[in-house]
Image (cartoon, rainbow, N blue to C red; front, side, top):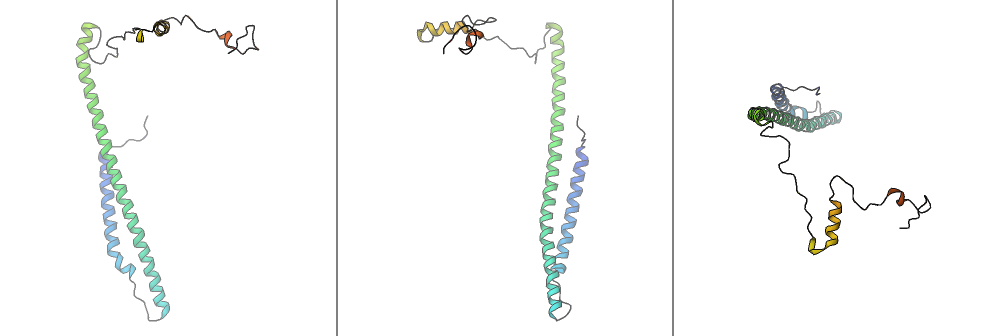
Length: 177
């Protein structure tokens, strides 16, 4: 039994909403790119210039990570949308299979009432295979071996007994291989 229940319409709506959220975040990152990466120094001293460069490098690192996260988010939304499409197509295929089964039952019902067997899908083989033995190249030894193997319902005529297959030091009979 499955503990996960997914309604394709809800998951599709969630994927659309996630796509909208991702585009909003991407727009905000584009708008914040210039102010966060190019920071003017507060003064002309070297400490202010170093701090501005440090904060500018933090802004550039943020923009690089933001691009990676945007790519990850877009891939996640695409995978979610693909899962919704696969789930919906599988659901539709199951509905078609159920409809096909209803048609089969409608055809088999009257036929089974008349003949005692369904017309479609009875699970029985058509014709039982016939096992024939022919001499291969005129060799009677091959045909005799094949006839011995084809005794239905019985074991072969010539078979070694289990107690004769023991090692020579066990049992009363000595059999050397």
